[in-house]
Image 1: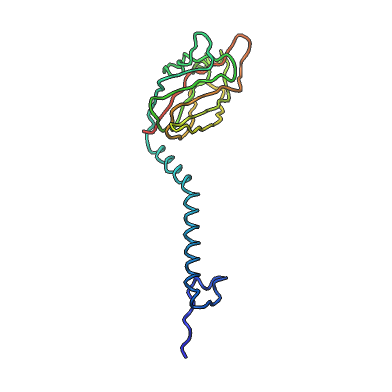
Image 2: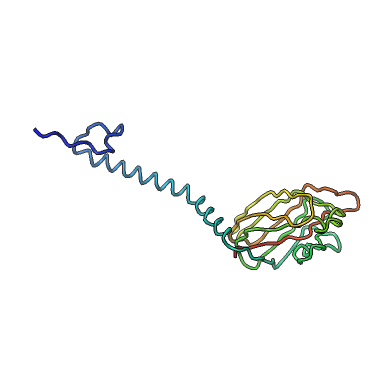
Length: 204
């Protein structure tokens, strides 16, 4: 009498190691296959956003950033003689003057783009001599709105020092960027918050 054929490997794992009737083998195999397919689909759904983010971040690093200029600049408040448009004029010795913390400036762009970086020059000037002459915001709330209305928020901590401070973002389809000033330093009587320059860069 011939020996029965050895069990396949998947039947050696509990609870499939038990012998089953010939008529039930197909059902067990079907259940196993469906379970594997479901697990792969679930893993794909969970990993897809992370994989896409990694792919876009890699493209950001490989490309050379290009400057982007907003078509409109609007502030919630301005000190006379120091409009918000000074933050995009390319001159770091002119600045936006905000009377108090909580003031905001909004930048609107002509068409959506991939915002890879922005550079903030805090205070009234990048000159070490002129920098301490007005107050500075050491915390800035970054609010980015995309073309489809999705909002991205990030809290930025700035160093109390003159000169440009780069911030990596990596946000696609950007339409507007809003900055809100908080945590002032040097805000005494007769002084105001100053923000010299904000520069935006898209993927090259």
